[in-house]
Picture 1 (cartoon, rainbow, N blue to C red):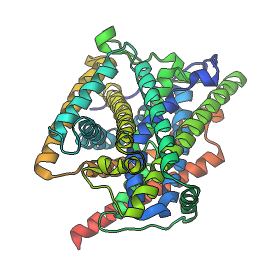
Picture 2: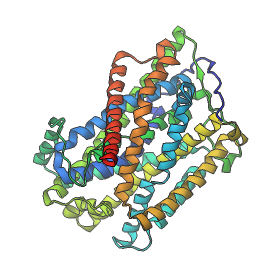
Picture 3: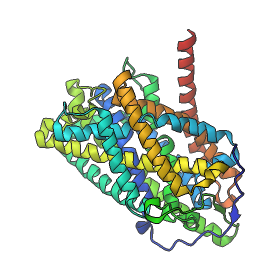
Picture 4: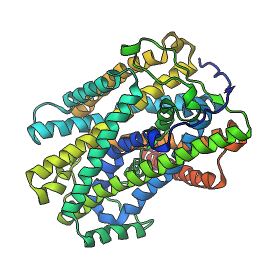
Length: 475
């Protein structure tokens, strides 16, 4: 049985003492999480198949997620707690809804599998030794070492992901300059003007379009991880909550997972406005602009090199096929440059998704179930990391060996499940921020309109998927 969550305690918002520049970090992790899904895989595959006609949908996917992130940041700044604790305050049903989706997602470690495949290609070529699940296990071992090596988990995550993002961005700029011309750029730009135009075939269904729109940007649960990164960075009320520490380095620590609320007053209103300005800048420049740039660079390479030749990356070896983007103009070393960029993109996403997923499970269990209080949050983080990594490796072996589920399928299934999560949590974000936050912290009309558009998008897609599946069963 679940237990009640204590009400927020009142406390003043901390004063921001560091410059915005020195506070950068959470947005960089969001970029690293985003690049390895829709940006690196799904949208280049779609562009290679159909050309630039659906560029508008990719751009829309990132833009509406920008407004979702604002609301996640609003909650985190004002309370210091995760949105999942807020959802549980609103209704206990949300706990079990999200846990059911998360349990299914553990069976589909898309980024770990693709990172492993890319590693194998780098060292042994397309037909290298070892099954996918073996290389997936190696990737998870590296993820474990990065997350549990240092004392402060967030600090290591921020440094590693930020370094990978730099590799990705510079690598893809090299790609763009080597493969494209001004005419190609104009063809790509014209794709933005084809709003509403969609193409489908046997390999690209409305279900896959839903997944691609969800994974343009962080997508799904990834947007909600932003609250954890703001808290561990000491942003807003998060400065009053200790950062998550590695139990292997610091022992068990009973970190606080329930947050605060500030008292209405001129000073607290000023401080909230100051902190929320940071959230806006962090998301606008790092998540939206930089994330969109990297996605468009990957799509541009697919448009210029693959689409004219009719090359559509295969379902299993799409990283190898995408590497033709550089090999065609730069030779063998260009292929390996692309592999390096792909490795950085895939691993940065897997690292961020792993950390966020373990935090999320820890949050849901330790906050809502009395029996889970036997262990400290950072102990749960370790238990869940080992358990979920093991499940993912076994699942990859089963689905690869007996079901023939391709690596690309892992991404699309993952994206659709995350889309169902967004169909519930996006409208709930507005409800939370109006129901529990002080009036000075509540969303303004423009935010309400944009998040409502995002909610309508995800709900419509989710209902359409349910309808088509139900119609297929009944008729």
